[in-house]
Amino acid sequence: MIRNRIIAIDESSDLSDGLVGIRCALHAIPLPNHSLDAVVLHHTLETVDDPRTAIRELSRVLVPGGRLVVCSFNPISPWGLRTLYARLFTDHFSGLRLVSPSRLADWLTVLGFELQEPVRYLSYSLPFSIGKKPWKRGHRIETALRRRQFPIGGVYLISAVKQAYGIRPDWQTSRGRPPKLAPVAYPKLSAWNRIERPR
Image 1 (cartoon, one colour):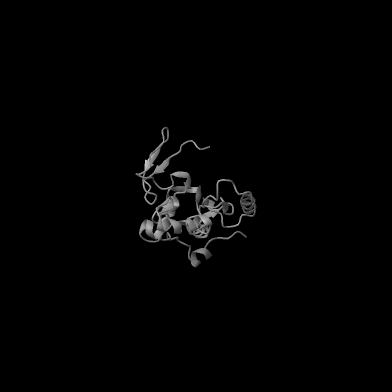
Image 2 (cartoon, rainbow, N blue to C red; image 1 turned 120 degrees about the vertical axis):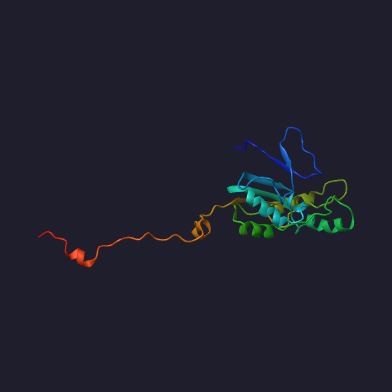
């Protein structure tokens, strides 16, 4: 039941025809608080300078009960080791800052998110090709690792929902001082004794 979609892109990217988008940085989204029902980050978190600030900004624009889906490269995988090669030679992985799924789960927990399912790991293949013919034994190993969900997959997928907590009003900040009780008059003991009681 998604009626409206907004694609956020940076200044270096181009927007496809027929799509509505905004140009902004992930740590400064020009939208009001609690204005989005769901956010999907597809290999976007590793491109920002401060991923923690970006997650905090996404928590601001999500409504209570909104969903956040993150698809990112796993640093504890063969694909994560490729970043070492990208530091020496210019590569597509050059400049990426990979965030481990455990650290991302901790950030989401602090911000009030709850994981709806365990972290899913994908792409157990090697980040390079071996020869021209496909390696059959490698395909079997990849299938076995995917079934057992070993945490060494090249890509991980996290789906979390923002929880809504009950908030107690703070009377001191809203009115400047705590509310006072209204005085109530009680009858004196002598007046109570003068009341005629039924016999």
